Length: 336
Image (tube, rainbow, N blue to C red):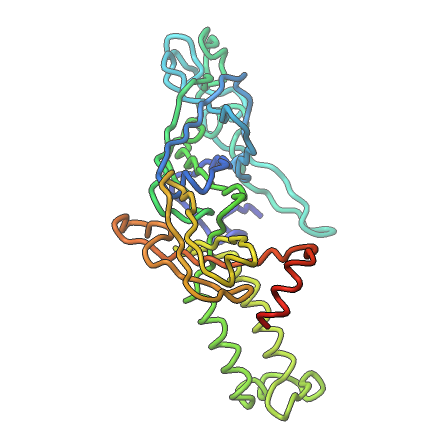
């Protein structure tokens, strides 16, 4: 019995695609607010075979560097000196060979496999190429520069198509710059409230419409709360809320510490923004602990709409005095 891989794997075709190279780049909140550029430089290394079934993942620190191999410009990927080739002696020029594979006791099939010597080409070199030494690829040095646009999400991916490693007969994969925001000491990017609202609506739907999941849940799985909710709904709502916490939006949060006198009498304090300018925060009257003041248009730029901005939410923390003098105590008693 003669079999081919198409019989077992449902056929196929087309050119094989190489792996992607993923580069993790640390960025600051200032970079995402003002825009910046980050580069990755390909480092030369010895050409070794690269498996095509796994992605290349590189966790990098400055300077950024990833491996890169390109088709040999001298032999154009044949591995032969002056491009002179000969019929592969291993497969007889067919590019494939027949192997026996035991599928079960007493059941052996003859399968067709690609020749590992010529790579399925049917030809091999007469003499090795002196430039690539028969490897068909050579190390290359190249720099990729990614533009970080204003307002980009902190987990945004910047893709360079077909800029990964090259191999003969294989479409190169992509180089992916994966942004990773560092924690900022003064500002925090807010979550996308629309996504969180969607999770809340889904969870509320599961609570108010219990019969929709009662048909799917076994009776012993449902744990009723006030006759309306079940375990499935509660778990779904918590998972959705946890998932939404990874989505960051266009608003900024800032914690401001003020004194008791400022909380009672009012104040005007500057906040140094991400672009270096000072934004004045003014409060008149009494400020309550953990009160939040929203400054319109002082948040992150909206990606793809850099002229529009989110909001800045300032939360006030009142620093209470640790002790009072006798005069201060008397004054407070007279006033209150």
